[in-house]
Length: 201
Ligand code: 0O2
Image (cartoon, rainbow, N blue to C red; front, side):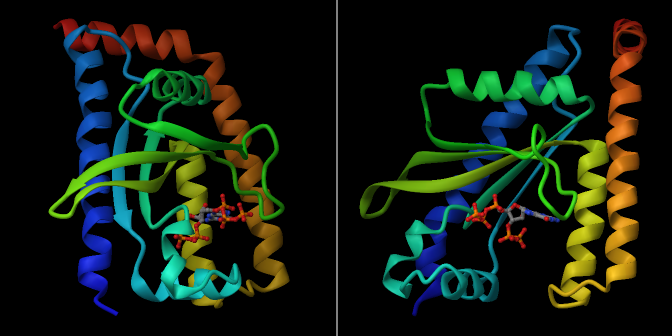
């Protein structure tokens, strides 16, 4: 399989979505308003990981476009409230179509994972014409991101079977991250006011 050619449109989608979401962030800054977006990252799923997912989900290799997160963009927000603001703004956009939403914040995953996922269909121009590509936008707070990044590394290290003792620690860490988000939300207005003063300087 020519993976370079197969994945090129996905790489294009990741770059385009990053530019557009970063544009939202910059507009907030120009208007001296609190930006609900702290930073944005993106990646194309590595081939090995695509193959593993295809096998796990029983997706034949000629149907890999059914995998929803080959193109993945992550929006990291300061506060939980910001996540829902970003979700609303994405829902309003005319340049993509939402095909699914998964709220792992209302109901976190068994692992302790919290995040809001939006699966979108995004039209991308290729040298063979327009192609609708699925992409996953993960929206989470800094605290959720800290937890998920560490848990992801441990999952990689232990090949998906994290020892029970470490799993229990991760659950406690997830609880602590949840509490941190809650406490920060309570002083959100204060923090935003401080940031406005800083930008107006
Ligand atoms: P990677 O390496 O990040 O690409 P579903 O059929 O909906 O239950 P699916 O399609 O895996 O399952 O979707 P889901 O559960 O929404 O997960 C998609 C992505 O969310 C994952 O991609 C992870 O990036 C992230 N994610 C989901 N659960 C966890 C978790 O418990 N811990 C961490 N750290 N991330 C999680 P991949 O392909 O699993 O991994």
